[in-house]
Image (cartoon, rainbow, N blue to C red; front, side, top):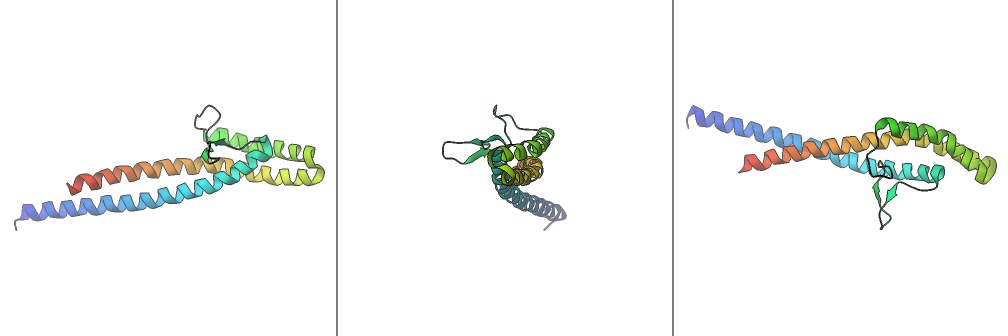
Length: 148
């Protein structure tokens, strides 16, 4: 076994360890952010129903397709989701009071506060989900390439 074969093997093993580690970490982050995004998006849609009377974009099977998309299908920026959340702080209590009096006002205020936090959180989780998936895909390509 020559020195060049040893260094080539060490290099290949190190590359494999690195790419598998990056894949494992980014895959875990992707799964976590995907699940968190889905759960927070359902809370966001509950707040959207309270404020606007309709949830985010829904497909024919009543599953949430994209809670961070506007009606044109464009992704929302963090700033627009933050402003939507702040707008819900005002709109939700007013709408709740209009429909159910004081009880509706309290419920609307609660949903408005939750929505003010959840709207930007959904956008951040969407970003984390896409970023970790991209890292995972790049690492997976490195794993496949090194195994050939």
